[in-house]
Image 1 (cartoon, rainbow, N blue to C red):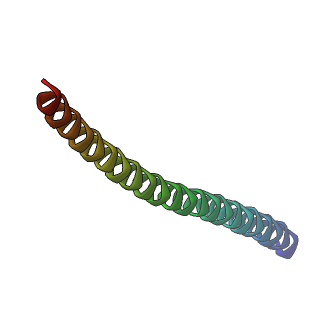
Image 2: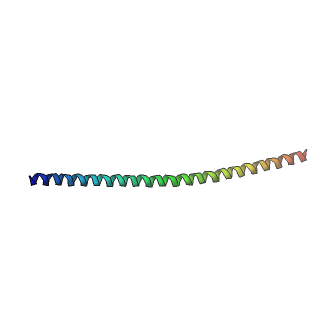
Image 3: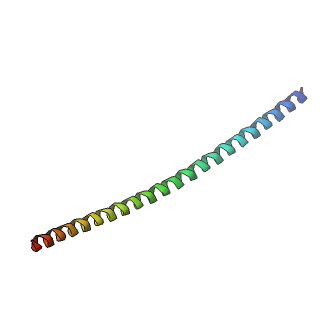
Length: 80
């Protein structure tokens, strides 16, 4: 009868070890996904900053172009 319990105990130990290993694997996978999510957040922030900078540069160029057109128009009006 003790032998039966010993086998049952060994089986439970094995099951507990497998469960622990599965838990560790799941935690490692979760950590990997969390790190990737943080990387993507950082990339997104960087992309948004780049987009803001490019939009600002585009607006500045549009303003400069408009000022040059106005200046050209005034110059053409003077020459007529």
